[in-house]
Image (cartoon, rainbow, N blue to C red):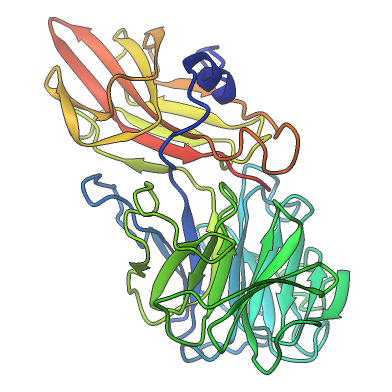
Length: 419
């Protein structure tokens, strides 16, 4: 049941004067692990903020192959890669169904976050000469960039799961030219803020390239990683780079400086990847909101989202409450930081740091025990990574039952990102 209340995240923040200085919210990354073989999602949240499922949040077995495959493959052999299409595509059903994009070196596969195969295509030896060593995604244009370590091509949505034909080439192919040579590229990332590609390689270096393959710069070796570097992605909420050697992930500025730890997704920087099978290949950046804290009472009302991930321009983004006590007076708390451990309140817990930025009265909980609050995320104003990109929100429902008794949901955090 919809309560008929509309929330506009940017308007809320403007009203509270909080466009700057907020603690970065939730975001995760995906990788492929070839020995399982499996795909996994993880990050480094604050240890004092309990999550219902700690990282890795998902470990999905690779779907049964319908096309030729390199799976399983040993770690750190510069095969495969991962990316995330945060607003989905026609194969997934659109913005409300994000897409995980993986390669085993031969095939490009698209799956749901739960691991269900959507579509796959053979790419190695067809659209590029060699095995695939990195995958990247332009979510806005639905272009999926792949590299064989020496060149790259941007392809479209592959044919159906059983077709195994090549996807259409939309950009290139191009060779990487004009930069340092003599190494093999093992990771690929698309930067929506600049419209360029980032790479990492067997020598442990990171580079930046135009979509025509010309070297721009950014040549640095991020400490303290080993070699080869096996994956790279762009944090589309702030333009930073996240890089892995298969065992550690670190976030760096485009100039190569280690980003400060302390963000919800980055309580430590660098951080160890939660081991689920073996060392990983590839990185894909996900805008999936995260739920932390615990509902009160145990098994009580729950917070959630619907309508896709938190990308700028997502008109369908929705915040939900379910399992609340009908008739209770419900309030939505909005803030820019988590509070872990929480603040006791009416025998329950508030997981947002006071003084709260906003306290929105929602009125009585309907008989269904649910609220559905549309929270349209406005498009960026003045460029692909302009405001509201980078704004983080932390939200929680608190319900007053009377007689000094309260109930509360767990809490939700998300950061608005670019496509």
